Length: 291
Image (cartoon, rainbow, N blue to C red; front, top):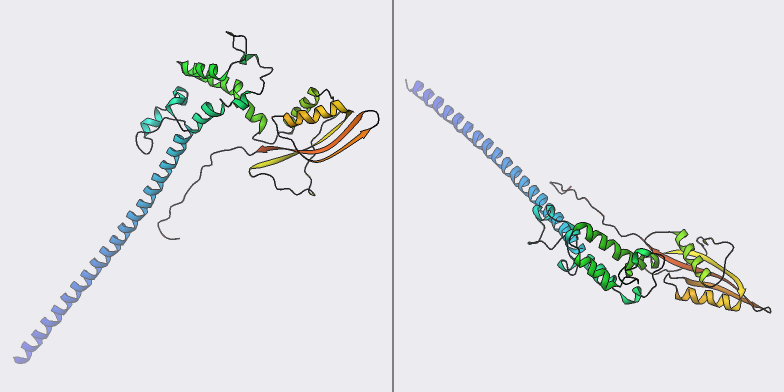
């Protein structure tokens, strides 16, 4: 009898241990799953926070570009809203509404530059004011722009400013791409103004033996000058090159004088152009982990 009771107690203890072991295993499993889910959710939250931060950075960068260039009016907040971008029409904006922007500086400062405006306007009848019979002054061009009441009128006024103000000089002074034909045309005009008609004109090409440090941001265009005429014409060529709005940097020159009042000039000159400025879009990859 006592033996049966002892066996029954042992059986009960073993069964209780089994229940306890199962409970511990269940609790451990539940805790493990909970920890895994917690870590997963924390990683998801961290990753989503990175994505949101990158999106906000992109929106801020886009807004800065739009604001600094003067494409739209300044936003009410730090960045443009969808409605502000949707309602933005660059041609309906007056320059006075976007002070300090690139567009404002171009139209108000560069276009009004007195030194650039002093270069004569030639061969473009659209720059003649029909009311005065003379070329438009910048003040007249600017008044036309400010008094425009429709988008079409404002576009036409801007086109006239580009053609007839100091802005027209910039592409001739420092082109934004390599254009050897335009360079030779400028040089040929200088020769014609000086009374010299060259038989041929050709670019010099690059010389690997001439290693020079050009100004930062400028790309060279080499050209060879060859003039053989009387002293007055050759001197006039040099003077007109010096006065040219297009830079001709003479690096090598040889001048020979002969007894018949003839002066021969052989020179190598460098003109310049810049790389076109563009906005470059970049992409950024967001990874959930360090790798």
